[in-house]
Length: 201
Length: 201
DNA sequence: CAAGAGTCTGATCGATTGATTAGCATACGT
DNA sequence: ACGTATGCTAATCAATCGATCAGACTCTTG
Image (tube, each protein chain N blue to C red):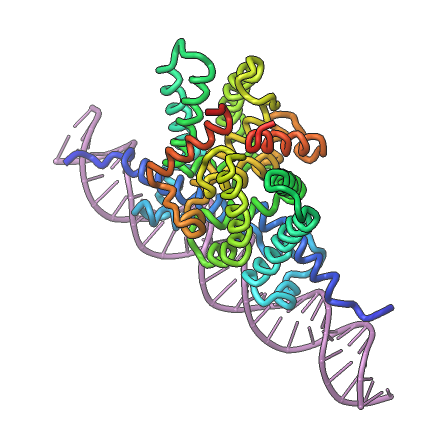
């Protein structure tokens, strides 16, 4: 048997941290709860990550890295495609990712409603690149009259609001409407709806 | 000088609780922080409200009471008006209220992403009535072809996502876009944008 | 004026928080 | 084979959490 590698445990801790930070907020998720779900002892968190704050940053890096990668990969396959189709498919990809990874928008809504060091870090490191890319694409569409004439920043918040909310509030959605927000058909229906409102039929 | 009445202090405590619960979540807001902002001592919270949980419920009642009242008052003034115009103006009212009271959607996104007694209580007491009213109105509009043919539940989550998100993430919006989400002109622009996407020009 | 109810504070409780320390066990380098 | 670095745990730290209790102050009532 080989010497136990640190990597698998690190990953298990990060996965537990992503879930619990996104569900219970930074303050609400205790290090003991995270270590418990990861199946390790609490001091091990401080061995792999120096502090709770460092653990949060590592978890957010992992989560937003996956989002950025998914969007970049989708865009790679769309070289030469016209702007409307590109935007349509990127919005679909974003809705789909938000449905399968509701933790992203959960963490955003937790950290970005109050000023603080975590918000500063999150915005500059992960959100701003996505925002800039979204806004330049939407601005081109508005210029060409392919999308209602709305300031791009407002379009950004409309998409990032309308797309993920149903899945961020997944448990509420199930209880309130009876609809299962993890059902692939439901996800497709929602992506259709958002795209239809934005780009027309 | 008259004997100090309990009512003003109760209101100050509730106002502080609404702000801090919505900003830092139930776990993240300590009773000492709330009492400090309200200018009273911490044991006084347990005098006016039996527990932190009771205080949270009272604060939520106050907050959602204001929302329900604002929407009801708006609808009262629209007796006899056609469905599209009614929906348009109610959505505008909702966006405006969400902009001036971002605490509403902040608390929803905090409590409704995980099952629990607070979510059950919040959904059945405050959210379901608003949901039912919204869905029946939207279903009529879809039936008349006045709104894209999208299941009403999805329209509900699109509106409750696209409307408040810019204001829920107010500090982020300011930092990310330079736009001041408390500016009345910005609020109007956003309400315009949401209505245009939903109901056309 | 005296008794009592209502409003509020200081002191303190046990529980839980993030963090630190000392030390155990195992596999690798020499 | 021996020493050492790596991965991990048990025990425990001070700080903070929600909550409780006894008592102080003030106005109302009889």
